[in-house]
Length: 262
Image (cartoon, rainbow, N blue to C red; front, side, top):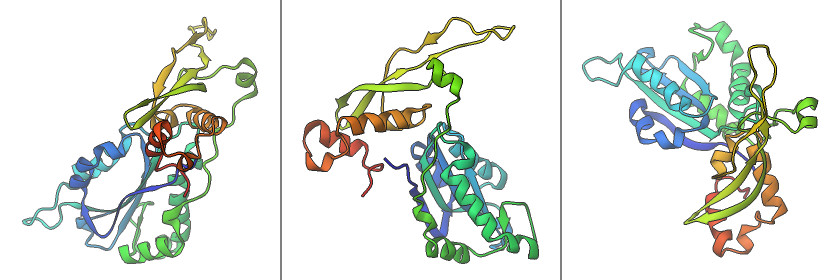
């Protein structure tokens, strides 16, 4: 299954940042995001390109930082406020290193493309570029960068952890069952053993989390979670949900709609 970008916002005119993040707080939770914004203070001369890639509430927090810095648009002071133009998001996957995440790859492509603009025009920080929103959007659309399809490669496991079948406390070993709750599918995750260490650096007695029933989104945020649930779905033939749109299959389709490839 893919974990492609979901377009949370795409607006050449822009929207008030604070209004957007409050309205979409749940959508931003546990997401990696790529964003484009423009502060009123810059008088449309500069565009800010940025990312947030730590999951949990960091995407909301990152965008909210701009609100605290620039405040809201105010008719009496045209320098206040910041407009948000683009927000692309995909679910935070702890198996994917920051350097290989979709948001980081997209940011890197844009920095490489507009490197000359940074060098030849007035420069105000590495993530600001002196181009128009129109020029930036035209480039993104012409090169289909809003339709990122490259695969996010998972982190390789070390030979020691593979041999001992050990991992971090949130490392999913496998999915062993699933159940239906209304229109949502919950997957039963079994976790690997983990260790804590004493002051001498010696591993203490191994411990293991009890099994948990989690949604697909929640599993993607766990170490090895996306790999484990995808393997479970393939093994149990649950990907072909359109061929049997009844009962559990229908609920599964609805739960995973944004992940299923067209």
